[in-house]
Image: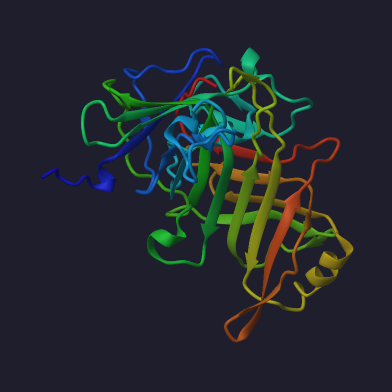
Length: 342
């Protein structure tokens, strides 16, 4: 009888590619991620029945079944606590633009301010190879090539307890080729010492205005931002994606402690589509290890913020970021003392 395999025995690693035609090999030294158990590699084959004449009976026939495992984007989903030393690749895979200092502490600015679509096939974007090792045998590895992040959601529940108050992320890696039965025998880089955001550091809004009314002094109970790149295939070669096309959309969420004499103005701002400006960051000095901040120069509310928190009236803001002429759609600043080579 076969022995069952624990889900937590699997591992996932990522590694930056040098270009579109240069995915990392199975023996590469992948950087191990701290993802939750539950990631699933999905090759997304298309299984179709050829509905042509001269069929022998009323049932689907073996010879009329068509399997296409080349077309469509393949994916690996993930979730987990945000590790300070492993977060940068996710921001670059989602935001596709970064400036990284060349010396310690390797502070980074990720800026969504592209003037034109990226030509991934000509090595204009940032691509990664994602490796998935199930752990049942030596050759049961999976490799996803030319991977980018289709979605990335980042959430901080600052009013939670225990691990629930640490920063969390969920997302989906997509790529144009997924290979199974790989022997992942490289010297993988181990997960660094645990260092989660919103553990000993404090996140607060340094800037938070709606229609120029200052709400930075209000108690922010939660914050979240989602990048949805809406990755599609504009061009195929023999069915395989030969290029990616992105249509990015950034949404963000802010949970406030209560409805009060100051925050009641937000209801009218929702009706009037007033501008939301937010900088949300932890309270460490700039360019020091552990720094993380998000800057949204402009946005507008997209849902009614009025709700209830038990017996109390509450406010939860849902908004979409928009680009101004001089500011990016979204900026993230991070310092991790890690040279990622970006």
